[in-house]
Length: 226
Image 1 (cartoon, rainbow, N blue to C red):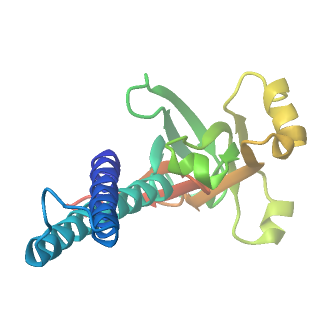
Image 2 (cartoon, one colour):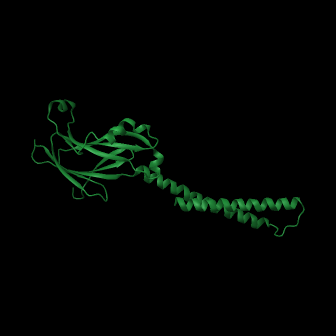
Image 3 (tube, rainbow, N blue to C red):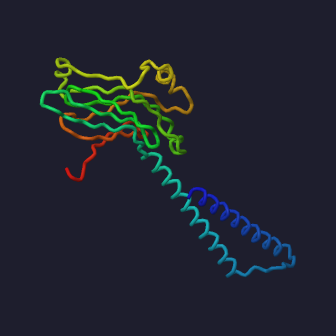
């Protein structure tokens, strides 16, 4: 739509310039009292001008709509990055968590963990580009780093046992370490930061984790039979 609108708008502007050039040339001939080989008819000229304005307006709206849909898609895009399946065995026992990493077209990586606590937490690194790069289609970069447990009460966090599992081989990755330190100085990078999402792990459920322009997003998958 953007290309079609831009081409149509350009053609409309060219037609308008040609129309104005011919009218100016006609007026100049009249003032110079030179014979005009094709005298302009006011009704025909008005009709042509209205058609040019209509053409330009239509393709201008097409161009605007193309930019609108492109911006909407760029800033609302949510790329799936993981799925978390929670299985609660017996009361008082750790929750069994199955983590499936990978987006569309990627080979899924399946891992299983046991987590104590009332909630699971998925942590990762986020590299956010400037908005105009998102508009052009450049997606947020990320890395999932840890899966750990969480308690609702901070007192339980201090007193009760916790679980934490690494999701990467090298937690002290030099690339991300330098991005955290120097990333905002790069002309294309908006910010680099850590991000986390968490949800309840006290009942059997399945969650989908996405990454958007602002970080991670988690949604519970509600089955039709539930």
